[in-house]
Image 1 (tube, one colour):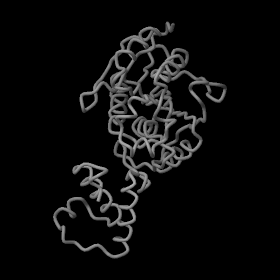
Image 2 (image 1 turned 60 degrees about the horizontal axis):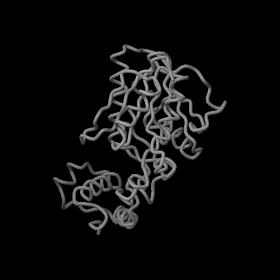
Image 3 (image 1 turned 180 degrees about the vertical axis):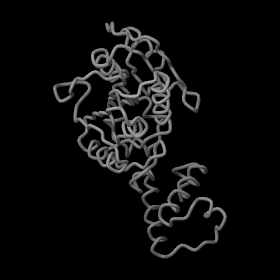
Image 4 (image 1 turned 60 degrees about the vertical axis):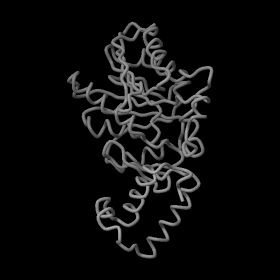
Length: 278
């Protein structure tokens, strides 16, 4: 029933996930004992979920939760569903903190959405003060619930990075990290409708004529608000790797590094604040 919406591997993954969630059966048990009978009440729930899946609605929104970096997160249509590529960004940030031997400091996550980056970093860097901003009050409500769910203390701020005002306290941060909107209208035509029809557009799309809009704004903010030699991390549009490097270079950042994701696509950038911002 889902073959018009998903490919075979996706259908199997969704099926195992949903049965595991509704029937509390492990994936191994489902495969080992396919003859297991499902009680009527659970069967009705599964049929209801199937009807929602047929509309293209992402399974994570239907279940209301997902996993990111080994942690549970509530998700709903006010926030993007966390992606594996973003886990790689978190991993790179943690690696870099380790190599710089930083035990304490301040981190700012720009455009936090579900809070997945900020919460994962705080969970692994308990000595750091972590703040996170988002323009969406609804997203911040979800992020706050996720911080409670994962038992971490995050300062959440309702603010627009394109127009940063007094609501953002301006301490110096050792790290600024962001997975900002970067999908162009051209990219949209290549995307699955379960993303474009259901996930929040303000967290996804940028103008076709200014695809680096958020990177410019965040870089300008970082010039002033990162410590000297502080680290800036971005998840990026794979089509704009070199342009992002040039942007950061023009603004005076140093040691700029472009990294590919597990699929071999240009997906992440790290830069160091030289302290001589342009």
